[in-house]
Length: 205
Image 1 (spheres, rainbow, N blue to C red):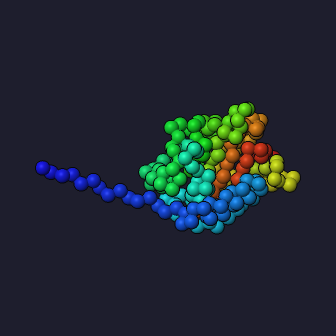
Image 2: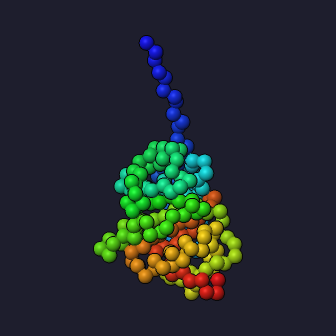
């Protein structure tokens, strides 16, 4: 009788060495970024991550995701390596559709339409999705102006490598507030946040 040997599985990439302490550190950075829209925040927390995933976004996922937060992986991140890593370190389930996701991991070069994600409801606006978008840069020439809570007057922000169409679609969602989407844009160890309350314009950018 011939016995078939199963090929050994590749172990997941490492995560936090000290999950409690490091998730608290990362959470403070995430709160700081969301409280100051458009300001770049460095996530100093050390964390392992699958190849190709920015450390800042890896730390954000391990901090925010849990058994009750379905995650949808966009093109470029819908891989066995990312799925295994998330399952092992967070236990978060994968969302069957974008609309069911609490958190979404996206590659800025392959952005889908924002309308496919949950904006929450009038009764439960907090159920709007949080998008974690990996971008090539968080600096550069100003491409838009943000205004709203946490911003004194206004702040000029670059397009961060995203197509202007995506930003215009996000700008149009402001009328849905308090429904909407919250965004974290990540590059390397840095990120900036765009809460749903922030208004975007393109005049004077």
